[in-house]
Length: 171
Image (cartoon, rainbow, N blue to C red; front, top):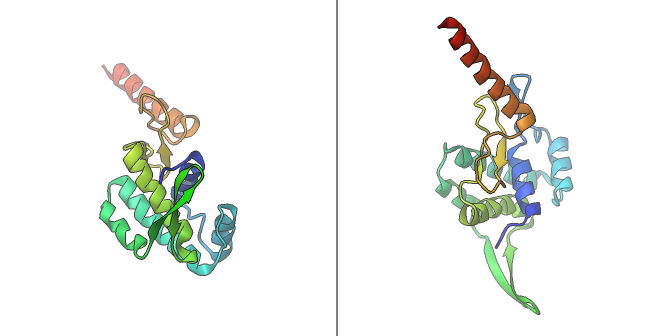
């Protein structure tokens, strides 16, 4: 299975559902209505069980992407999932077979796996320690550090500039 941009965006949007807003972490999927809306907007059905599986996958994926968890922690999310080959006129397509209420969670884990395999190190947390967002570095040089240059990038560069200016003034 290879992840496409739509899959990449799905994973990144899922990981970024726990931003820090005015100094407090917010869960954009908290509450059944918000979670159902998000799932429906991303191809799910919005059932409570589907949301429960998705939240479990998100939490483990966030820990793994931050280096606070082991990739093996994702294994239980894939229990009973199989990839089935389907011969088409264009070759072989691999389709995931999983219980319907686990498909969005399984999709997130398999997209993460495809990124690790095809573009290792490209999915990572924002370098701003106060930020809870992730980025997918699509640059050729693989040097992106911030979830957003306009937000975290500018903020961190301004802080570094002010520290240097104070240090120079103190000398």
